[in-house]
Amino acid sequence: MSVKCVLFDIDNTLLLKKPSIPEKVFETAKPFFPELKMEDVERAYAKSELWQGEQIQKENETGVRMSDEEFLQNIFRVYRQSLGLPGEAFGQLKDVFMRNYFMEYELVPGAVEALERLKARGLRLGIVSNNTPKVRAQLTELGLDGFFDCIVISEEVDIYKPDPAILELACEKLEVHPGESVYVGDHPYDILCAHKAGMPVIWMPVNPYITVPGYIGPPEHRISALTEIPELVNS
Image (cartoon, rainbow, N blue to C red; front, side):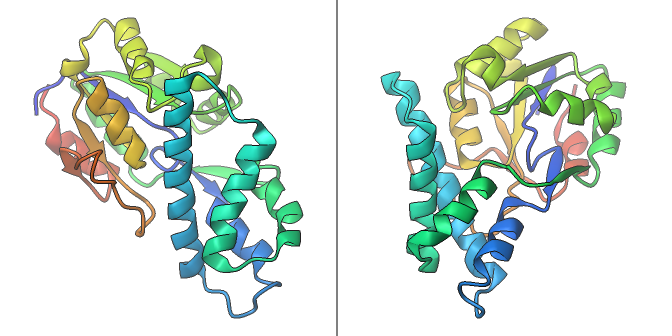
């Protein structure tokens, strides 16, 4: 695969939250169901991520944004249906879904090595993420910001994946064509977003239960470690 530019997602692609959302949901829900298994929560998380991708796609198409409260209620509905949680659990899980708990970020293994090797080849590197501006501080703290020629954050530009315009904006900033770029992400809707932009995908899912809906179609490449990327990309 010959490209001039590699674009990356952030969460679960370059950075990992500790504790993760599934880990925190497990910790919060365990008192309600002592027999609860982490595997159950991971499955529910996968369903929740698919619902969120579908909802954001719908909002992009209609221009109508669901209220934050309703959005959180729907995420809880997915977990409740999957895990059998009582309604009163929403109050505690709401903070988890909003990331209102102490968490730290850590690098995904192999991130620095992969970025160094790609940068050494003269490839342009960028970030495109559905995220808040606060994540910039995490990138700086963990020493990643210097690798990237362009960082596009959804809340800053008011464009959200899977709208391909957010990838197209990054390509415009980097002065490359989408077809000369590749996107690295972990979410099925990362695949949809990139394909809508005419861009191939390197997919690295961290959740073993997440599936790609048939209407999205498969990624060009699936990897299990970031260090596999330089072998796939020829500058």
